[in-house]
Image 1 (cartoon, rainbow, N blue to C red):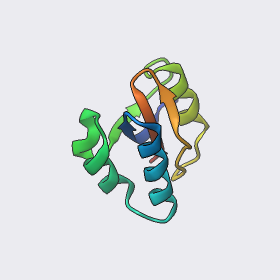
Image 2 (image 1 turned 90 degrees about the vertical axis):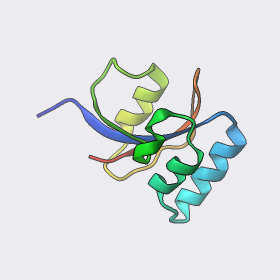
Image 3 (image 1 turned 90 degrees about the horizontal axis):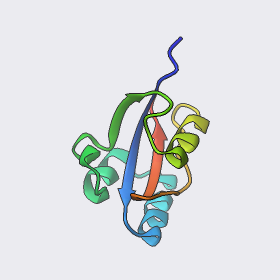
Length: 91
């Protein structure tokens, strides 16, 4: 059993934008499409896909939120030094 999880994220600079995107996802809009359109991270080309990662790779706030998610679940807005993330667990 691997201790790695597979997640995607959307990273934006403003809390208001993150909250707006989180609401769109809740209404059923495509996480990957929103990531491609709005994310400021290089992962946007892959619909926000970060691949598999284990503990100790991501910043603590991101890691805590990501590992708390169930498959298919989307996090609330998570603030890190990079900005505001919305995380989706894919595995």
